[in-house]
Image (cartoon, one colour):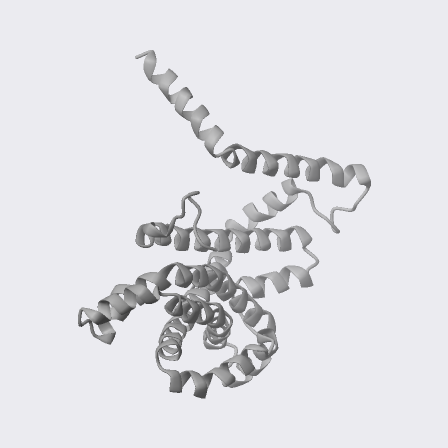
Length: 273
């Protein structure tokens, strides 16, 4: 029984040597929070300008005790999720078509590039006019913002397939769909997941931006309300929640990538960006 704790300590020391970030990440967070907590009053900054972490935590507790807060959170999550799924579906279909059919690429790619140069945030008021103040305009906004990073990665990923492998399958009589399924799609998956990782965060951004322009619920709407009430601690609390949403979404995508694209690790154990 005495050897078991010793083995655990040895394993912990090995893990910390191989992955020092397991200790450094929480240590940096604690140091920054403590410095923030004590530096604000020491420097003489008013709490209504820059609240301390303890005040932000108190505001977060107050908001979490209000059922309306969870309603706002649910709305933003659904808007982001629906917009992300819509944007990803469109990007997969159009990206596959552009990368596989030369005529489609020459026909639609100029329009895609032109639309990509338009600031997506500037489209939010237009979407509100077209689709109203409800959830639809925010879903469309989230879909549009998350669409382009996924599209670019789908196109580049499908084009990155090894030409020698494609030629070998073709020699053995493989059809176009078989080549796509056995070579192009597996080669594109690391790129696609990189696009998904960016797109899910952009989807949350799109939903919040849409709520800024016109909404009656959602975390963006709540952020505006705390701003109007000059509740700076409450604003920081909402920003913390949005950050946590982004981290959760990022973690889900990374977990799925590790499960589905396990062969994409290089010799150093890192994955493509």
